[in-house]
Image (cartoon, rainbow, N blue to C red):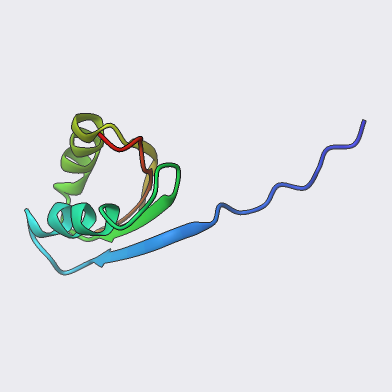
Length: 87
């Protein structure tokens, strides 16, 4: 049985919150997420280390799924969020 090739996820929106301090990365994330439909993906780039605590908590509180949060450089993180159902 052959396996179908995997396709990269389709990102619906991107937030570049680099060089912004708390709470701006989360506020920008929240504004962008409001434009998406359930199931769509949001990519977030941030340079504030607080994103490692804030983004998982924010997703949990608002019913979204944090698919990944990777450190790309000493002060750069990349997160991928899937929007949950509208509340």
